[in-house]
Length: 371
Image (cartoon, rainbow, N blue to C red; front, side):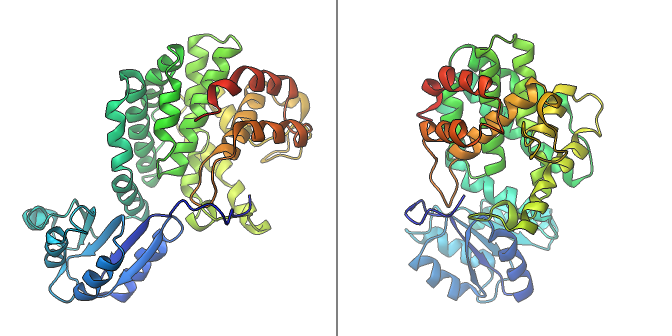
C-alpha cells in the first residue's frame, strides 16, 4: 500500500548516544526500519540535542565521551523536559558490577554487550509500549489476561527462534484461553482496542488475527475447542516474520519484486518454527501455511486453488486480508472496515471465498468497525 502523505502519526524518535562510531551506526541501522533515529557521539552534544527534541527512548553507552553515560543519564533526570524519557544503558562490563550505578543514575534498563539485534528491538519496543501495556491494567480481567498472556508468549517465541528452538504450544493454548473466554463474553473490543497502538506490529497484527478468527468461528457456530484452535493458529500464523529483514518488513509503500520474494519466505520460516514441535495442531499449521493462498491459484507459497483450500485456509485468508487493510501502521492510518470489505468484495472475488466473506461482512462488521 502506498505511503499516505497526509497521515501525521509521528514515528517514535530514538536517540543513540555512543562514542564508538561503528557501534553507534550499527545500533542506528538496526532501529531505523522501525523508528526515527538520531545519533550523538558525546554526552554534551547529546544533552543539547535531546533538549531541542526529546526522544521517546534513549540508548546511552556507559563509556560515552564527555563525562560518561552515567553522568548523562543523571543530567537527563535533573532536566524537566527529559526526566521521564526512558533510558537503556548499554555496557560491556559485568552486569553485577554496574547494577548499582545503573540504578543510581536513573536508567530504566541495562543492556549488556554483546546483545542480539532482536534483544535490542524487543527492549526498545517494551519501553515504547510501557504506557500502552500499563493501560491494560484498567481493563476487565479476561481482556487484561488475554493481552498480558499473549504478549508474554509472543516474546518467548522470539527468544525461542533466536535459540533455534520450537514453540511450546501449551503456552500458546494457555495464553489464548482468556482471549476466547473474552470473545464468549462479548469483551473482545477491549482486546482489539488495547493492542491497536502497540508498537510491535507483528504482535499487534497476530493478536488481531487471532481475535477475529476466533470470533469468526463463534459466529459460524464452531465449538469452544475449535475457537481456541483458531486463536492459537492466528497468534502463530506470522511468527516467521521475525526472521525477515526489518527494512523489508517495515518498508513504507509497495515492495519491489525482489523484496516481495524475501517477504514471502516468512511462510516457510513460520512452518520451520512450528514443525519442530509435533504437538502443534494440524489446524494451526494449515492457517500458517495457507493464509496467503488464493482460490484462483495465484497465492503463495504453493499456488493452491479451489478445493485444495479447506475452510480453515479460506477463513484465515479473509481475516488476514481484512487485518492487513485495517491495521494501523506508522506510515498509514487504518482503513475503515467498510472500505476494506468493499475492496475485498469488489476487487478480490477471484481470491477469496465470497460465501464466507458475506458471512464475515454481515455478521462481523458491526462488531469491529470502530476498533
